[in-house]
Length: 317
Ligand SMILES: [Zn+2]
Image (tube, rainbow, N blue to C red; front, side):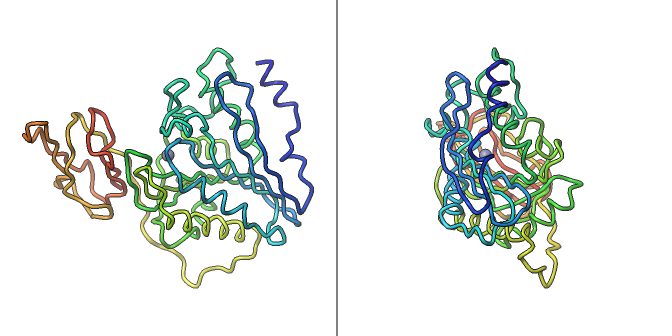
């Protein structure tokens, strides 16, 4: 508690940025076992909103970090209004372990926001609080960039939470190559909690399989630039608004494990009668088909084919 209070009272370098300047450095949260986070910050010549861009909240997702690096490596401050803060790797411990979740305590950081300042809590819960208080609370807009991670592959999609028209407007301008997505409210998710805290919250998914898709990096980078230009009032309105139906659904998990042989591809339209794939045991015997839980588009599919009970099989929406 004392640590967090003293941390909160310290003015951080990125908060002292003068107009037309940038800063890169490390921020060490005072939490045992949590490595320092890389912070990239820029302030434009004009006033404007503070935009927070986050990557690698899950440690095995690479397009977001690379896009944040690319954004800051080629940022024209004369076109930037306000500030943009980049946290390319929020979950450094998980990143170092090539893992979705933190090796420090096994927790999925993206399920424990806004965290706790209880010094006896698991480090990931304290990290969630520190990130939320230092970076999310001061921002106006959060853009949280994800990928499918080692276990999943996602359709490119960018979304908002129900009821936030400004977030929907921005998300629909992020890039035509990404499907619009109505993100389900899941407690503890960074963007969901930011939305609940009154922020304009946008989330995105692209690819996965622990691969870095250069096309995903390019799409994310272009999307970030476009949203910053929109927020600076420098992006013209589109000739025709994007009226595509958003993907709206959730992950479905399997009750049993096995070798998953998919019958469907990303982007396929399915119904509750569709068999997404079959699970096999080591003798080659089918141990059951995995039925789609709802109608919609296959927006994510298992990449790591050997599934355990309760593993995510697909995202249908
Ligand atoms: Zn993720």
